[in-house]
Image 1 (spheres, rainbow, N blue to C red):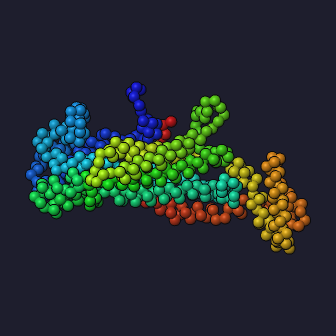
Image 2: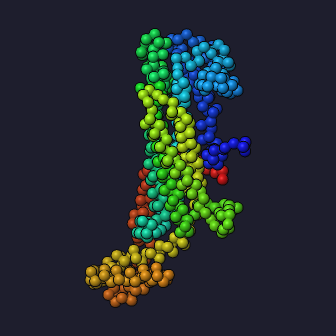
Image 3: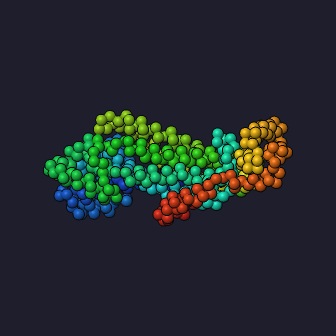
Length: 477
C-alpha cells in the first residue's frame, strides 16, 4: 500500500475482494478482449474476410494484457480504447487490422459495463440470499418469544422476537424480487456504431440489414446474454444505470431499517449485535458496547441511497445520441454503489449470524407494560362475572392513569393489577389477574405468521438456491 496517496475506504475497509475484482482493471480489460473476439468471430461468420488464424491469435493473447504498452500509448493519444486496441495489436500482428472493426468505443465500454453490472448483481444476489437464510433461522428460533412491540416507539400490543425478524425478512424478499427482475432485464448494447444507426456495419455487410441484426444477436449469445437493446444512440440508455442503482438503494433502505431497529434494541438491552472478546467499544468509556456494525450499515446505506441521484441526473441530462459528461460520474457512482452494498450485506450477515438475545430483559420490559394491555381482557372477564361494561371501563381508565403516574413520577413498579384486585367492582383476585398475564396470550398469530411465511415464501427460495448458501461474512474492521 502506498501511504502517500488517497485510498478509498470502500476497497480498503468495506468491500470484499470478490466484489473489488469485478470492478478491477483486469476484469474490465479482459472483458474488452472477449468482446473484440466475439466481434471478430461474428464478422467472420457473417462473411467478412477474417481468418481462423487471426481469431486464434486474438484468443491466445486474450488474458495476457500488456498494460505497460497500453498506458504508454494512452499518454500519446489520450484515448483508452484505442490505446488497448494498439496494445492488443502489438501482441497479435496478424489480427491487428481487424481488431475493433466497424465498432466505436462504446462497443467495448458499454457492453463491458453491462457485463460487469450483471456479475456484481450475481454477488449481491448470493449475499442477499445468505442474509435471508440466516435471518430465517433467527425468526424461526424466536418465533414464540413474546416481546413488547412499539408504535411511535411507544409500547404497543406485544409481538414476538421472531415476528419482528420476519418484518426485516419481508423487505429483503422484496429486494430479492427486484434483483431477480433487473438481472432478467439486462441487455447488451451490441454493435450499434457511432450514433446507434449501425451505419458502419451496414457498409461492412454490403447493405445487408439482416446481417446487421444478426450481428447483435450473435454477439449477445457469445457473451451470455439473450439480446441486445433493439435501439440506442452511441450508448445504451443511461436509464439502465439508474434502474440498477435503484435496486441497490432498495437493499440499502432495508438494511438501514434493520440496523436502526438493532441499535434501538441494543439501547433497550434486549438484543445486541456481536461483540468480540478484544473489541473496544469506546476510547474513553471502557465498559461500553457500541453497536458499531449496525451504525456502519446505516452509514453506508445512506451513501447508497444518496448515490442513486448520480445516475438519475446523468440519465436525465444526456444530449441526443450521446455526450461524454456521463463518463467520469459513471466511473464513480456505479462501482461505488456496488462496493458499498457489498460491504453492507457482509455486515448484515455478520450481525445476524451473531445476534445475542436477552430473554429476561425482554420479559421484564413486557411485564412492566402488560397490565395496561391486558385491561380489555380483564374488563371482558369482569363483565362475564356480572359487571357493568361502561362503569368498569371508567374505573380501568382511572386506575391506569394512577398507575402510570406511579411509574413515571415516582419511578416505582406498575401497580395497576394491585389497584384492580383491590377494587370490588371487578370481583377478581390477584391470582385470577395474574392468570390473565400470560404474554403468549397477547401475541395474536405472530408465531403462526412466522411459520407460514417461512414455509410458503422463504423456504422455497432457499431450496431453489441451495448452491449459493454457506457464505460466511468476513469484515475487515
